Length: 220
Image (tube, rainbow, N blue to C red):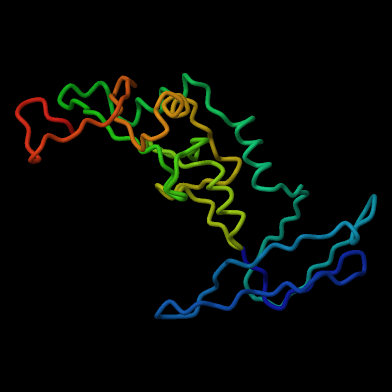
């Protein structure tokens, strides 16, 4: 997001707050816009029922597109409740996603082995309570929904990307994983990771034999 240079906004004849650009950043070759300007939140005192007149002026040679959105502020805890209530994957879809992370079943030359699934959030480093990922994520691991939204809330310019793969992860793109929820519910609170088989069965991660070597049937 970037405001045009020397922007000003009039709302029903009243001047809104200044629309200042963030200072440009030096990347070693040239100064570039950060594209991190804050959007303007228009208070209700500026608007009135019926028609409203907004006039945006600027002195910037680059073309811009202005977007006016009607929004409702939510706390991060309210978002956690909304995403959990409205965007939880059905168990069948979540199970299908889990199996897809092991690759193509039609390839007879490759046999998928077990995978380790961390039950800790990569952001808070604590046990996941509500497992989530973005709809575009292809990995098995999840992050904790509350930790993710709380981190975004505490940042002036949240990136809204998955902390595991950097795929877009805005609130409407988040999905709660019901299969991982069953894993969390079935695993002791002291367990930080599990071993998952391609068919979805899971259990504790096998311990490596003493000395770091094994004879036949070693664990991964």
